[in-house]
Image (cartoon, rainbow, N blue to C red; front, side, top):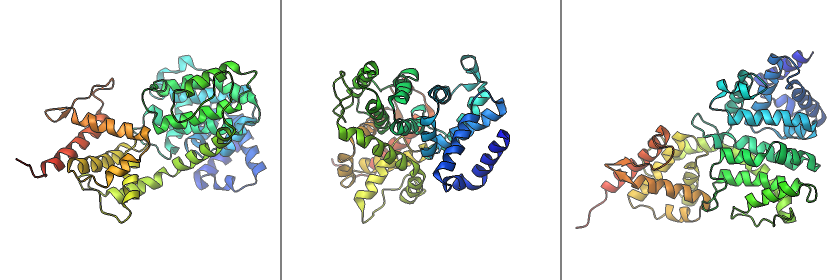
Length: 382
């Protein structure tokens, strides 16, 4: 009977992308997700629980997880721990699953199947995604689940048992570096921590609250309360769920913006930024497309357009757009531009721990070439 349920679920996924499920009444969806969660438990056959886990990971990666998040929150806390711990283990071990089974309770192929489904469904994903980019969908899932929870028990599980802060530190090495502006990805992580802080009990959860306040005090975007309480403003707490849902919707439409990128950037990365009547929105879109959230091809081409305008000294329109860009994103762009200009024989001199990365060389090398090509066409004053 359970096997037939999985087969039915697989058919829904294969032929209708779960549209039939999403159009069914809320209670029906709830029971279906409850059954799917049950089937993911290791007490069933490895084949069955692996396929259920793969479906769950696909839902999380595809960021269509509102009903799944609600089901996880309503599940037994110990069972929620097992599932979420498996997902976190899966993501942290994404670069070495074959050798990871010694430290896990299930074979490596269980996690590999889940990770494959997760990556395949990512709306913003690409083969060159970093681990930090890979985990954004999961963090948004956690933020939504935390926000939907109705008691501190689930948030306590996330803060203490799953130790979400340590998980974030592992995927975001700059998480605890207050001198560096937070990227947009880190700001999304901040949203999750704000939701978590808002759901903990101010009396019984003093220690995790103190830790969260300490971490959140490193960002300049929020005025976080003192470690003695979770006294975030009522507005901040009530806005957390809306902000998380907004971020989810934004990421879900990344593929649409990639299509728009092709229209804006065209096929030739060496062309100048085209002339449009709505220059503000076009330059803002090109700046957006240069961010690490997009695949290497798109962001490299956007970066080349920016560098060509700067090198050719045709930056009257893009300069105001850069000045109005969020500080966290501006830091990354200017850092990349300055890195391109630290050259030796027109070769990038990358002073980083990940020196030699082919992806960095491609991105910065293309930007430098675009800058030099445009610069060389300018008249020289003697």
